[in-house]
Image (cartoon, rainbow, N blue to C red):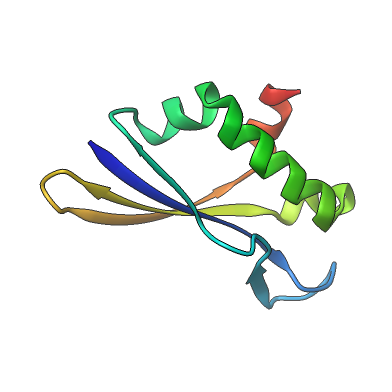
Length: 92
């Protein structure tokens, strides 16, 4: 089993280097799926991310990233940052 903690981050302003998390609470998923499988098959997760993107604004889509911390069943921790645009276009 993998535990995923997901934060949706983007710049405070369109041309700012300062990034902040826009979701009030991190999204937690516990599954046997890989990160890619989780993002391409979990429609509840996709809906939550899409709602947050709507709040941020579509004009920021190129700058929005998912910061994902994964903890595996053998307690290995990894952190990745994924641009959301690739997945968002697949979901539409």
